[in-house]
Image 1: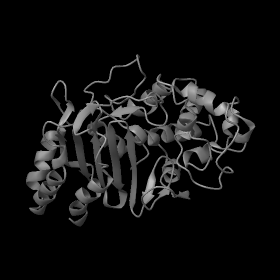
Image 2: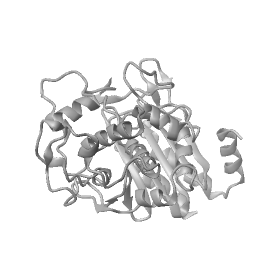
Image 3: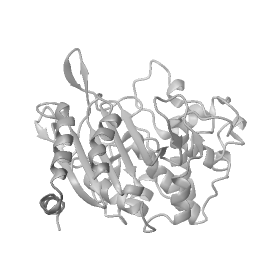
Length: 348
C-alpha cells in the first residue's frame, strides 16, 4: 500500500486525540510554510507514518515545493551510515574496530599510531579538525584526499586517544576512506551496494560532485540581511564520510525500519552502535555517543548541520516512535521542534 494511503487509513482508524497530535505538528512547522525554504517531516509509530508531509519550497528560484520524496543533504546525519559501513566490514572480517587508523592510512603521522577505528566512531580519537587546517584563502572545495593530506602534515592531537571526547568530522572522513581501502570499492558504491539497494532506499546517494545528479533535490538557503539567499555549497561541502549523503524522509523510513532487526546489521553491531561509549561534552545538550548516534535517555538521535541545511532524526525504540525533520535552511535548529512534535505521540 502506498504511504499516502496508509497514512489516511491510520488517521481515520486511530483515536480522536491523534488528530490533536497531527495539528500540534502542523502548528510547530508553521515557520517552514509558504514561499520560504522548507522542510519535510515524518512521524513513524510502529513503522507506520502518522505524519508524512512537506512544507515550503525546495527551490526558491523555481518555486519547487517540498514533498516527502524531496532529497535533502543529510550533513552529519550521514555519520550513522558511515558507522554502519564500518560495522558491516567488521562483520565481514575485513577489518577490526581496534585496528589503528595508520594501519589503513599509513601516510598519517606517528601521533595517530594509537588512534583506533573504534575511537573515531565515538569521537575519542583526538584528531585535529580538518576545518581548522584549511588555508583561509582557499576557495576550492576540500576533498577527502585533501583532508588526509592536511592531517598527514599536522603531527599533533588534541588529546591522548581514548582519553576524552571531541566531535570530529576528521574522524568520519577518515572512516570513509577506510571503507574504501577495506572493501576495494568507492565509498559511494559500497553504501549503495550494501545499504541503500538492499533496503530499497532507491533515491538515496552519497553525492560526488560532477558524478551524480541528485533527483528531487532541495537546495540550501540562509537568511542574510532579512532575505533568503542560496548557500547550498561551501568549501567543506565535498567531503563524504562526515556528511555527504542526500536522502528523503520516505527513504529514511526504510533505514529506520532496518534498525529494529537483523536485515542489515547483526544484533551485536546494532548494540554496539546504540550503546553509550562516551559522555558528550562541549555540545549544548546532555548526551552520550555510540557509533554515529547520540544517546539521551530513551532516545537515539543525530542532528546534521551544513551551510543551508538543518536536519535531525530522533528515535524512541522502546515506544517504536521515530520523528525525522529535514530542512533546507540555516535556521531554526530542529532538534527541540522534533521533541515537541513527538510529545503528544509519546503520550498516546
